[in-house]
Structures are given as structure tokens and as C-alpha cells.
Image (cartoon, rainbow, N blue to C red; front, side, top):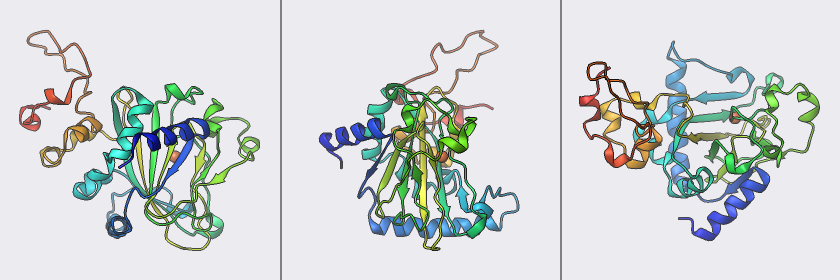
Length: 280
Ligand SMILES: [Fe+2]
């Protein structure tokens, strides 16, 4: 577990450079187990005619919504103590999960294509106002040759949403770094830091899991509150908060002509029979 000193160091580096690599977040055994599962999911999704393959032709395999696909494996990743402690210090208010997805960089040679971008909707220059944070678990070692993530240090201070910038081609020539990291590390980066998936040129495996967190008042990309009773019953208090159960907009009761005043509530106020009492 992280102690205060290292949490402080991580925060300092994150705020100054826009990213920070933290070693030994997962053991080799955990990484191998997860990679095995991701390969299984990759096979399963390739046989699913409804699955949307986003951009494997261009060098990235993406499998979104992992905690809903295999809750027992992925739920424990989203609320790791080391991560929650850092996030608490960045957000200073309730935060939720935007998504948790597998991301593999694959060798597609000349077909590699990928946009430098930020994940935040707003490119906020003020680190104290960071609205979202990404944590990338490195399940294999990340090296330049197998497609380590490219990061533009200090770009979080630019106030530029690079993918929409008219000077895109010129701007991305600025200095970037490959986030080379040992297997089991986690790369933290602020949602406003410019980044891009690297090009896999040696065909070595490069699986990562991207967990994206946001302040509670931003809409997540998946509505986790529709997870159903089976998954709901597996969630601890923190995970319920991350799924957004403590920040659902109140419903107006047409019969009584009232509604709960506040959107944000405490996890202790959540009904354990949530799915029995809810009416859609
Ligand atoms: Fe991204």
C-alpha cells in the first residue's frame, strides 16, 4: 500500500508533468491472469456479430465495459487503494468511473493510425480543476517497440484540446515521451494531458487496462447504474459510488409532486434492495 510520502510524490509529479508512472501496482501473476482473460474476451467479441470493432485495423484493440463483462476479475481493479488515495487528492469531491477498458497495441505495420488527443472534454489549465483522470494498468512491459503510450509532458498546462486544434500537425511535433513502464505498473495521467497509443513494431504483446475517472457531475460513457441486481450485489460501498449510485438525478414523483432535493447522497443511504425497489 502507498504511504503518504509516496502519494505526495505521485501527486507532485502528476501536477507538474501531467503524468506519473507508479511501479508494482499489480503482481506478475495478476497481470498474467488478466491478460489471459482479455485474450478470451477478444476471442469472444470477435465471434459476436454485434460487437463494434473500433480500430483494430489501425493498431488498437479496445474492449470496453470490462466490469460488466467479467465483474469478478475487473471490479477489484477499479477501487485499488493506491488509486483511490491519489484520486481523492486530485478531485477533492466525489468521483465516478467513466469506463474501464482493455487496450491492446497490435502490429499493423503501415496501417498504424492514431490521433493525439486528450480525454477531458475541457482542456483546463488549472490542475486544481482537473475533471478527469486516467489510470493505465500495464499488463505487459510497455516499451517504445511494442507500442508504449506516448505522452506530451506538461501539455496539461496548455489549455489546448489537441484533437480539435487547428495547429494540430505543428503542435504534436513538440517533445513527447514514451511512457515505458514495467509490467505491473500503473501510468496515471490527467484527462487534459495529450497522449496517443504507440505503434507496435515488434509484435510483442502490449495489453493495458484504461480506467477513466471523472467528477461525479459529469455523465459517464456507460450508465453503470443499469448493471442489474447480480452485479450490484457484488459491489462494495466505494464501487457503488464509482458506478454512480450515489449521484443519480432524483426522479420527480408525479403523484406527490415532489422530489429529493440533492443529487449527491451518501453511500450509507443506498438501499441494499436497490433493484427490487427501483421501477423503470
Ligand atoms: Fe485517451
